[in-house]
Image (cartoon, rainbow, N blue to C red; front, side):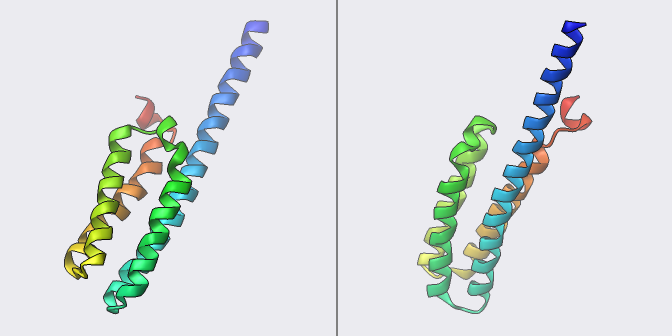
Length: 126
């Protein structure tokens, strides 16, 4: 009986941790993707100074929000996001709208993909 109670407690803790992890990832990515959309809007309107400021905010948010991500995520995925963010920064600095928009779209997609990939469901278990 004690074994069953222990297993139920462990299972409950794992499910709770997974749920908390997914919510925290979703909140972090929602914050950053919202900022990405603001940069895209600024670029569409040719407001490059605003786009540069927003890009700096994205970078700051990334470093604040994603510092705990390596515990739960693949390091290659984090590296890809950092490379993409560096490209965005340079494209905005050089005022290259097509490349900046394309890289922002890629960054947005990479970030939105993370919580879905890490979500606990039967598809991810099997």
